[in-house]
Length: 398
Image (tube, rainbow, N blue to C red):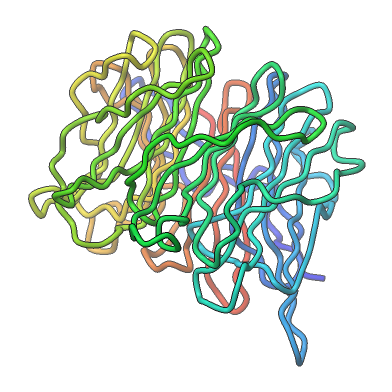
C-alpha cells in the first residue's frame, strides 16, 4: 500500500488578492493503491463532499481496475471503499467514472466496460446505493445500444425522483451515419431506467460533458457541438417538462476543427445565476472563457477570457456566490503562470483572487482536474503523473 504524505495544513501557495487577503492551498493526504487516476468530486445538498477515482493493479496476465470512493470528514478522507472492479474496463484520462451524491443516503456510480475488441468499443455501466454506499445494486447498462462503438463522457445530476444522466452515444458509427450523438435518460432511486432520448444527434466525439440543476428544477446540459461545417463550439440544452430543448450555442466562437480537441465545458449554478467555462482555439488563439447567465441559463453574457496566455484548458468550475465563480484550468509551459491555475472572478469580469494550485503538465497523463464547493472554501483534486501516477487533493480557502 502506498500513501501520499503531506502535512494537512501545508500551504503550497499563497498569493495576495486584490482585496488584500491571501489564498491558501492546503494539501489533504489521500490513500491509494497501485496506479491511481481519473478523479471525480461530488457535493451533496447537505454540503458533504465525495471523491471517486480509479485504481489499477497489474498482474502477469491482466490489469484489473477498481472504482473507489471516499468522503471528506473533518478535513480527512475516510478509508476508501470499492464499488466495482473488473479486468475488462475501459480506463481513459478524459472519460472518467463518477460517483454522484444526492443526499439522504442516495448515490449513483458509473464506470466504463468494454463492448468489443476495437480500441474505443465500450459502454457505460451504473449502479445505485440508497444506504450511503454500504451496498450497491447489480451493475446494469445505462444505454440501449450495445454496438461495439464508443459510449461515454457521462454527466449525472440528482433530481427529486432520482437522477438524470447524459452521455455521448456512438450508435451512429454502427448504423452508418458516422456521427456521435448526446443521449439522456432518467434513473430512479431504485435504479430503474426511464425512456432514452436524444439531446443532440451530432456532437463532438470525445469532449467531456457537464450538467447543472437550476433553482426551479430545470436541468441544463452543456457539451461541444459539431456543425456540418466542423465548427465545434459549446452548446446547451434545457430539460423542462420531460423534454430537451433545441440546443443553442453558449457563444459563437466559430472554432473550426477537423478533429475532437478532447476539451469539454464545466458549468455550475447558484440561485438564478449560471456560469460556464470552456476552452477554445478559435482563430488560432487558445483561450479559456467564462460566461454568466442571470436568467437561469436562457441567455448568456459576453464571455470573459481568464487564462494567462498559453492555456491547455481542461476546465473545472464552481460558483462561490450568486455573482462570483471559481475556475480551474491547466496553463501550459511557457506561460508566466504555468501549472494548475485557479481564478475567482465576478460577473463584471473583475479578478478577485488568483492562485497556482500545483505544478503540472499539459500531457494527457495529467488528466482533468476537479473542483467542488466545501462550505466557504473549495476542494480541488488532480492527477500527479509518474510511475505510477498518483492523486492529490487540497482545500483552497481565501
